[in-house]
Image (cartoon, rainbow, N blue to C red):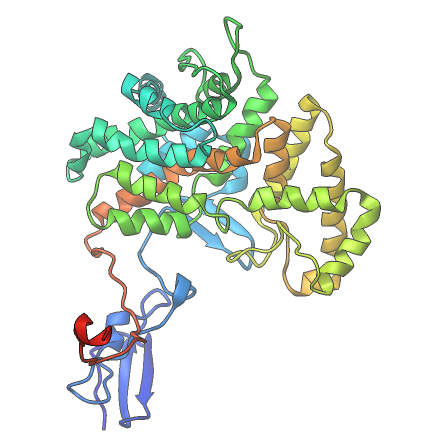
Amino acid sequence: MSNEASTSGNETLTIRDNRTGHDYEIPITDGTIAAKDLGQIKAADDQPGIATYDPGFVNTASCRSAVTYIDGEKGILEYRGYPIEQLAEKSSFLEVAYLLIHGALPTKEEMDAWVHEITYHTFVHENVKSFMEGFRYDAHPMGMLMASVGALSTFYPDARNIGDPDNRHMQMVRMIAKMPTLGAWSYRHAQGKPFIYPDNDLGYTANFLSMLFKMSEKKFEADERLVKALDVLFILHADHEQNCSTNAVRSVGSSEVDPYSAVAAGVAALYGPLHGGANEAVLRMLRRIGSKSEIPAFIEGVKNGNEKLMGFGHRVYKNYDPRAKIIKKSAEDVFEVTGTNPLLDIAKELEKIALEDDYFVSRKLYPNVDFYSGLIYEAFEFPPEMFTVLFAIGRTPGWLAQWLELVQDKDQKIARPKQIYTGDRQLTFVPSSERWA
């Protein structure tokens, strides 16, 4: 007996339900089948159809997206079709932000207008300053950033009008412009230092460094090599397909909430150690190793299951993370300015040994972006709790590009995954007077 769905072409999957003997022909589109097509497969008409069980979305596509392409087997990362290597070498963070959100590289006139808009909106309302000053002296900078991004929705109530393209554009400009200000102020609060206002004579990344480190000097001047290195780090972090924080932005955004609230959800997801805290774990590992002479013993400990090799391997990449190659060069440029960190020598030697060892090569454990980024942040003298704040500033245009794609995608619905219920059923309630008697 056969119950066939209508199909077009030869791209189909035939499924036989061994419970009933029925065959089903499911269309294949872009290498996927629609989960709803499985719903027709039932053991009986009065029972629910088949659903998929996929914790963590290991093999489930939640959207169609034209923002970022990743080929984990080949180690390829592209923003809007442009290889990350070319963008890191030849572009700037604000140009990449424009590319991610608008889908194409800007003309000179478009770029000038984009930079002007973002520069003009770097200041925040004075009440935001008061809000941030109200945090405890030891508040985590990431918690402050998460709260202050969400608070922006109260300063711009028109942001709820997400159906207006001009309004959407203004909110995205504001968020990209104000994230460095909020991030820098969260750092200054933790340091017990006065907040520094934006200096709009400076470029985006140089202005951020000024708000972080300016003290009594009239004008803060950062070494251009440091500015470039941090700009490259922002580019490398700008988007990374449907990761945990991007999925959070899309999931919360699917309720048609304002973009500030959706991005605050992304910041919250990034706050977790499994997402944004990996580079700090790399630093702890390198300090524990202590010297190059201790690396062989550490490698042996990893093989025996007594040590963890942090900064190697990735959920997506089964090859050398393309961002890691770029960031390694940036680390060397930064140390030309700040002086060599002995941890860099340990990292290089550890990488060299691991890449030549069959144990790691056979398991496709290659360095990822976190392996060197923590070293760069430490060279800037950032405390570890600031690492994820820097990550969030770089990721903001990617979150916004994904959010914009979501609100314009007519296929998207409010996020509401199925569950497999495992609890009790049909219990009889006994009043407390009887239960306690």
